[in-house]
Image (cartoon, rainbow, N blue to C red; front, side, top):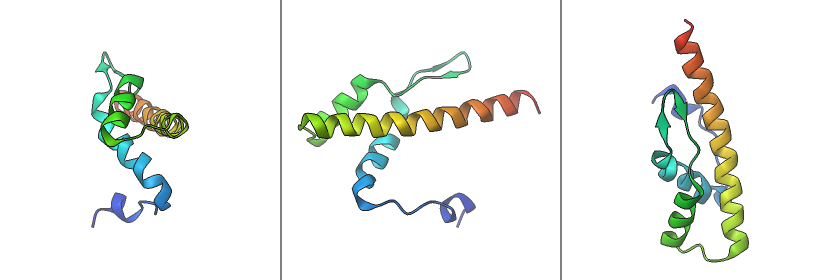
Length: 87
C-alpha cells in the first residue's frame, strides 16, 4: 500500500461527508498561469443542492469546512510548485 495511504488520518464519521465533498469539488477550481484557484462558492452551492443539504446552518458549516481544507491544500500546492521551480 502506498505510504500516503498508510499515513492517512482516520476521520471522525461526522467529517467524512465534508472530506468527500472537498475531493469531489477539487476539479472545479480554476487553474492557470501557475495559480491554483479556490473551489468556487457556486460549486459548493450546486453540490449541496444536489446531495440534499438544505439547512442554511448545515450549508454554512459545509462551506467553512471546504474553505478551510481548500486553504491548506492550496498552500501545499504553492509550496510544491515553488520547490519545483527552485530545485
